[in-house]
Image 1 (cartoon, rainbow, N blue to C red):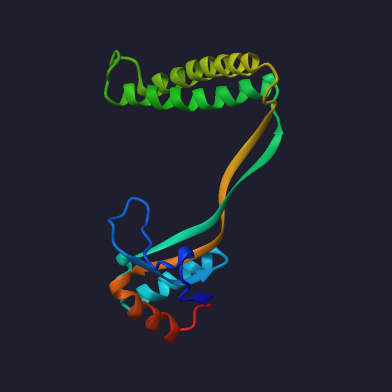
Image 2 (tube, helix red, strand yellow; image 1 turned 90 degrees about the horizontal axis):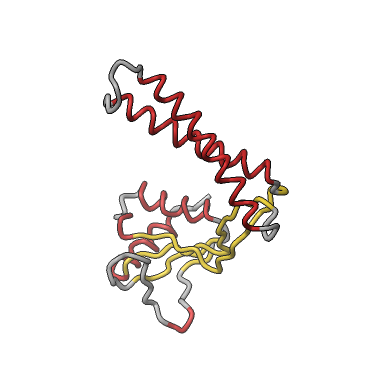
Amino acid sequence: MHTSRSNRGGSSDMRAAGAQSVPRRVIATFDDYASAERAVDTLSDRGFAVERTAIVGRDLELVEQVTGRLTTARAALNGALGGGITGLFIGWIFGLFNWWNPVIASGWLALWGLLFGAVIGALFGMIGHMVLGGRRDFASVGAMRAHHYDVVVDEDVAEEAMRVLNRIPVK
């Protein structure tokens, strides 16, 4: 843990995205999110007003893990799964609120929705893959990762937060 790190440019004014324009100070820096989370939990356990705290990831990178080759069949399967789940949900909603003929059981509407959604989803998946013409023939999962995590607090309570963190060891 690194404590009381000053921001680049020498300014101790840090603003969290979407938060009010309140001056903030970095009170600790960690190399992994779990350690930053434990520091905030320590502050919470000791009664510190954690609503005045944020964990800010720095040095972000996008990691896209390739999970396999994307064929027309796999694109159709992915489309069928997505469409089937959507169709099942819509059919269930129609059955739940009796928006269709109340004689038809809601279970049958959900099953027909699943079937219809899977067929339409598979068609759209196949067509979408064929339209790309081999430009992206792989499936992947993207994730954002930070190299460092800063625990920041409002400037007017930063000294108190540092005292609380320095008094109690963060595991």
